[in-house]
Length: 200
Length: 268
Image (tube, rainbow over all chains, first blue to last red; front, side):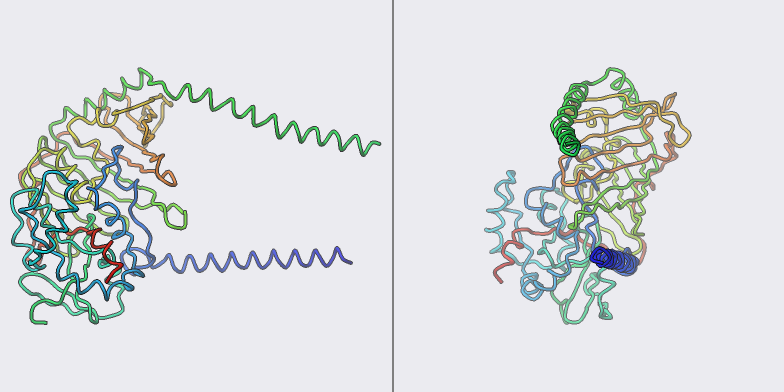
């Protein structure tokens, strides 16, 4: 009698486990279907050590690596947590470091601290002042905070109907209270939270 | 009594099983380790013949498919990949047209003066001034633009020396039929990666497949690339390496995450 009872308990547990697997499988398929370009879908990491396709491990200059990885991982949760605090500082994130650039990259961190006092340019000026010099170019790149960029797929999946505005040859997208503009980052076109364009 | 003796016998078997087997297993890796540090002469011959052939081409086009593992936070490895057509004109021109599996497509063009990335679906492009040879421009893309060109080890001026740098072992695996072509299958290792390469036997020893295993990285992810078609006498013109934006296209900047700003992010 006792044996029979145990058999029933074990059979019941097995059924429950099987059911859980089925439910998990259905959920996985449902979620996975929206991935890729259309839906924004799930936020997989799409880049890692193997994506470079080389026997050499090229590493981005120090200070760039970790950030690049984060930008690619499309971390929407942290973006929303941080967005409010970050938006204000996005306006200031260009700096005129040309005169201070040292050959030694090791000094770069100090330069950034010094140069930050001299910030004055903004996004709209960017396109005009790329110089024919690699080092100048390196410093002229737009810099943004981790968590203030989203991918094209994520941008398309935002719940708002975005408004598009062209100012000085730059396209801005407004979604609720956020303004976005596009840039290449990590080889991808990304939508970066920027300050409102002049006149808006 | 018979129950006791049977139990003793079982315990003995269990004991031997637990202590004896691991010793037998432990002996095997030692012998393969010895084998692993050999660079077989035949391997270097086949490999160098292929890479010398590739290095001597003044220009070529190659079509490739590739895929790579990306380890997710859950510990699961997911494969992503792309199709890419590469045109090389030594010493300082190249063009890469790609279609990712998720539908994102575009090109990377270098004309000896500028590197241009473009995305027709979004009608945008970005360019950066750069003067140098193909090797330097590929490094610039990987390091500064954070857009490494997959399989670029085969597009540099001396692919043999790049691929065999610090090589510790090279073994001949087998003859191997790949898409109807009889190849030599080689396996090599250095301290960072293991890689396998398939090189056709015959007059045109241009590689057909490569697998790179990033053995020191978490999850030991792999990259594989399959060269579908090599064209060693392509018809090229200046237009091949010129990006002409459409009327609707907008130039956008390159941007980079500033980790210093990230560290300040905690103190709004």
